[in-house]
Image 1 (cartoon, rainbow, N blue to C red):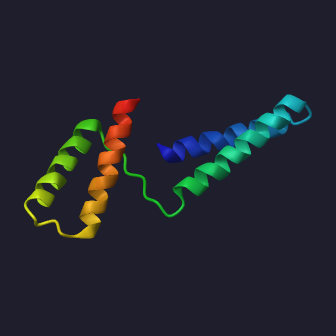
Image 2 (image 1 turned 180 degrees about the horizontal axis):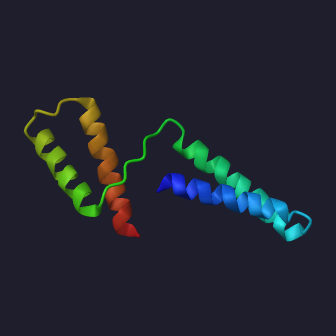
Amino acid sequence: MLDEYRSWLESEFELLGRASHHAYSFGQANMAKRAIERFDETLAGRIALLLDAPEAAALLEALETEIEDGAAADLALRSIHASLSAATEAGRDR
């Protein structure tokens, strides 16, 4: 999904670049270029994991159980739990 979005941004940038003789198109092309740069910066060094809401809820519940049982003393699991919890909350706010 993210690859498709980046490809779409690039195609918009190229399309607008071809019409750069219009001031409006030039401004739009610059915005598209900045969007691609921001997209790349945001995802640099990260792995995007797309989960359906039920999958995320089930994974979050499993992590909570592990943490409550004390078996998940691993900082990495706690970090994943915190990230997933925050992402789940953000998804509910939309």
